[in-house]
Length: 158
Image (tube, rainbow, N blue to C red; front, side):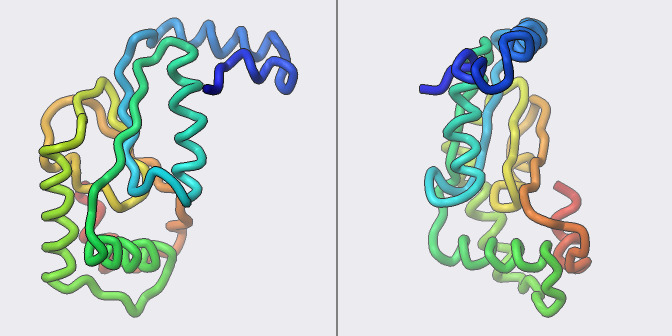
């Protein structure tokens, strides 16, 4: 398990102490991270280190992973590509339905009761619609500088 002190040889004791001191302000806060996969992707690689590091400075951090089927992940792959600029992608009503239904089901089974819920990438983005309370943050790890505006118009309400 990673601990913030493991980084002292890299960044120095003063930097680690600064992080620990800043974390005192939010000690005990419940931070839930939600993404689409527990392994095999950049976000999973980040979270497998970030969650233990957050815990090491006193946050009550947890990582939740969406449960979806192959149709859902085909839809979210299309969304991903559209956000990265593929202008030929259109989300059919059926695709939208799959996307929203899987997120609705996940809202009922995932632990989303946090002071802050961090949504990583577009796959779990609609979860916010199905839960009340807390602060929700979307952390998009993909390049959205030239998105497909039709797809973005569907997503931006979340």
